[in-house]
Structures are given as C-alpha cells and as structure tokens.
Length: 393
Image 1: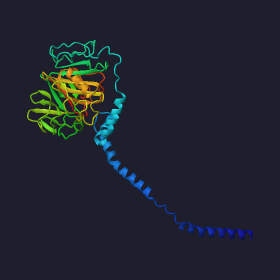
Image 2 (image 1 turned 180 degrees about the vertical axis):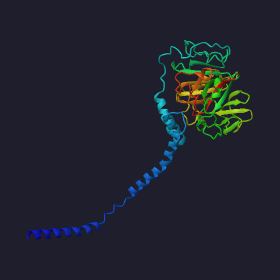
Image 3 (image 1 turned 60 degrees about the vertical axis):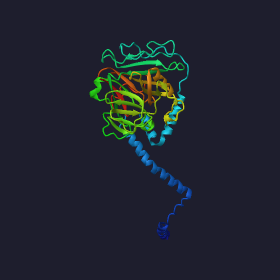
Image 4 (image 1 turned 135 degrees about the vertical axis):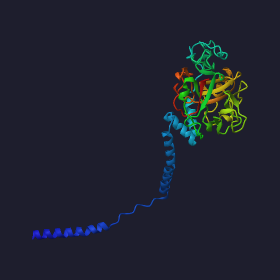
C-alpha cells in the first residue's frame, strides 16, 4: 500500500506538473511600458546628435590622416579654425598669450646671440641701438655666408627693440634683390586654393646649391582676406587696398598697396597679399592701434611672435621677426631697419621662420633668432604652408 500510494502521488504530482508546464509556456511576457514624451524626445535628440557627428568625425579624421608636417595640436587648431571654430581657437590663444605676456623691466641682456662685424662693403647703414649702452655687435649687419663672394647679398642683424622690455630682441634680414632671385612656393595645404601643379612644396633639390635663405609667407588666405598669384596665374582674386609682396618677371620685387584689380597684370610673376600695409611712406599705418581691418586673428595688440617684410628706399628687402610683438611694435622694428613700406607676414611661434645657410647646398642652416620654434631645416622637406626661398643669381 505505501508503495502504491507513493507511486500514485508521484504520478499525480507529475501529471499536475506536466499540465502546469504548457500553461506556463502560454503566459505572455508583459509589454514594456510605453516611453513618455520626454524620453522619446531625448532619444530623438541623441540620435540626431550622433548623425550630425558622423561628418564631423570623418572630416577631422581625414584632416589628421592627410599629409602634413605640423604637430597634432597645431593641426587640431587649424581644423577647428577651418570648420567654424575660429572664434574658439582665437579665444584660447588669446588667453594663453595674455597669461604669458612679458613683464616690463627686468635684468638687461649682457650679449646677443649674433656676434661679429660685417666683412662686406655693400650693406645698409647699421641700425642705431635704442638702449644705451649698446651690446657688442648690436644693430651691425653680419653676412650669413662667405661662399657667394666678398659682398654677401643676405645679411642679418639683431637689436633690442623696446627700452621698456630690455630682454626683447628683434632679428632683421637684408636681402639684395639685384644679386638674388626670390621664389614663392605653395605648401601642401596653403594656400587652400586649387593649383593644378603645386610644385615641390619644399626647396627643390636642384636649386639648393644656390640657396641663401628661406622665410615664411603670410596668413592663411581666409584670414588674410587677400589674393594669391604665382607663375603669372591668379589662383585667388587679388584685392585692391591689400598689402602685397610683388615679384616681377624681370626679377624686381616690391611691397606695395595693390591697385590693379583682381588679376595680376602682365609682367607680374607672383603676388602674395596679407592684410593692409603696416608701414607706408616710412610711417606706421595710423589704424594699427584700433583699426578693424586686422581681422579675426590674434588682433593688433596681443604680444606674440610676428614677422613682416618691407622694402627700403633703395629697393632692397627687409625681413623682421621677434617675439612678444604687437602689430605696431613690428612696424617700428621694420622702420628702424630702414623699411619705407612694409606688410605683416605670419604670426605665432609655430609659423614664423627665417633660415640662412652658411654653406652651399643648404649646408649649415641656422635660424635668424635662436628662440625660433621650428628647426632651421624647415622648408628642406615638404611644408604645410607657402614660403619664400632666396637664391644667389
């Protein structure tokens, strides 16, 4: 009996379980609660943001993976400027330079990095120092090389440019256009216009035996609001009223206020524009302090690395560069070095470069100022931005 009872209970329990299982299978899981309007809106918003980010990520990735010799940080800033974030980039740079602005006064310098006396008989008048007593070789023109002959066509000088900042040193270079030829080369990404044959984007190897110097060009065209012409062809319309570095087909050069319309006329080999003139008639532009024409860059008053190119009364070129400069102080440096007309070129430590070569074939390169950021070999490999090269004729 116990055995039968146990078997009966077992069968009964098993039967009940078997009967219960199909019922369990038939139960439907409860549907999730419907999203309220706020949740639906948030999901749509996040989906929209994700879709909008796709082209941004692709653009940034394409830029960062493209050919460039600039650092990751610089390329990120340049991408931001080119894609609607110019104001953000400029604000960040303004904060940085404001926090690192130089203090007036301080200990005076004891010596300059450039020493020596010019061996050449042909050179401009030495620059009269602003601070007394002058340092050894201050304001004296010194040849960058001796292999070109007794009168070097490129010579450099250094001087303290502001008595209020006695540790601030300006570097200037004199270039004799009668004994040199000066070429303009587009870079890998600048100017950002379609040029069928951009050229080597560096100093051509075949021309390096005659290379005397290289130096930076101007702003990106969208910041310069000017034009660009090279090889007799105009690739960005030239703007009247813009400061323009002009090279003629007969080898002459000039820095002038452009007045010939959007296309370069016959006889002009290249024309590179960058904002208005900062020096005209040997005097600074009266709008340097508060004029609106200086654009959405770091402006005219922020102290930063700046560079410029001018022409003197004899028709020779004067290049200048220094750290902690405003547009106005850069103009004063160029005037003191002899410029009667001058324009600002590029700014910021990453873009300001002047290199000279003490030996043929780009041998023994050196920077105009030892504090320049980029190596003296810049432009001997492909560079992002357009630049100038000076050759012995």
